[in-house]
Length: 639
View (cartoon, rainbow, N blue to C red):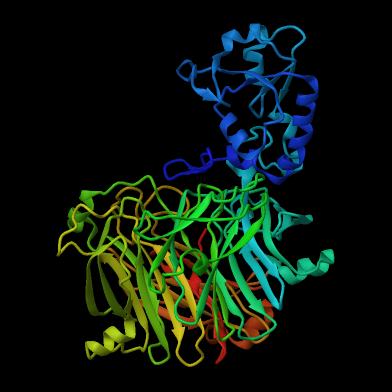
């Protein structure tokens, strides 16, 4: 029961059509248009750009008495459109209808092309009747321009003593030097519109914060759990709304962080862990669209199994549903993995780990790609790309933390994963390499760094370092790699019992040659050989820690030239610290240790650290720390 919509292509990027048709303000206007059409009588539909399927998927057209559907592409004549064969637009003069609905925005031009075919007395309507207001458009000349729909969804909760906080920077104005604003609508779990607002964003590189407590006070709300729809006006450089999501509570033990929702709903998501002993895993499903998700349209299965168990209960338009994984798949337990059959209904979901000790933490799953096939060429890339695709992650201080890796299939093409894990000291020295073999799609094989070090009778001289997951073809599997290598990393504080999950995928790092858009670049063509990362800071006794890794597929500069720029909320730089990270090494640090109290006081509330390096590409993880109580950790975002 997947939606008939196109959302994202790894070649062309995100699609604006479904965003425009599914925008909350378009949903507000759509009933008026459909009612007018119904009251006039029969409707003829002209679908010049093949967008009728998206409209029908996201809005209920059943009230319309459709006489015929017309298309302009000859190859589409006879194709199914709303249960009837599409007709050539040349047949339009014979239309038996009161109104012609043209499925297009900026419809004047396509209408002008067929003006001579429109029968006298046939009223003409188009999707321009449900456009969002012009003050929300970045590019007023082209409605479907991708920068007009720089949107995303956020999970926002303020209930039962638990709060959430979305933080990012106004990187759009950093590109354009023009002002920007953000339009928001908060939906409760049942899809009720709780509040709508529009705020000016700070100047270039200023901090953007949406805190659930502030929203609750501003609009006089009761407890809520749901979705905040965010639309950036004046976007430039990126049509993506990236952010960090912190969850915190009235109790100090409540602390976790996760990543943005990924604005393009996907068919499948993976990397969802089954619950461990004394745990529950709550999957938060956020309906991304203005149409309800039918009961049974979503489902869960053990990774590698075709036995899908449906998730019952309709999810309202823009609604949010909590699903206890054990209620759907009671036989599974950590480190089993779960796959979500999502059908493009929901954005990248969060999951919440609930311990029987009362601790909660939130993390996210990842998009499982359906467009990949195995690439035998990857196995022969060593001559050009050295270590090739690398997935780096921290090894936190081994005297206190467990650092766990669980490789996660993240493509329907991955029937097996031929991988190895390598551990590095902070100075870039390879300490240990552990082949994991050719893991099956249904595997539940995890490794823990401190255990590996102890069993090998070795240690990290700095007490911490990093690990890299990479392909290993020594045992075969040359035909199994597709470049979309992922893993779930779990960090457990053995002193407090607090934990954090984070997950990401492999890339080629720091080499001058390119392979299939790698090394990836945030802006411009590959190779991406520079760094711009966002690190938000804590307050009120909460510190910020950061683990920067300098991975290199081939030998690169001996050390990084990394600037850590402490930045005020208005985007003004306060102080810069220069650090040198060894190639294939890492740096684990805290804001309170890198910048003295005077600099932090000058930076003030809602400060952040811009991590900038023009000599190499770093990969980073960040989080907040309440010493001796709780910590959070997730991968960082760049722009």
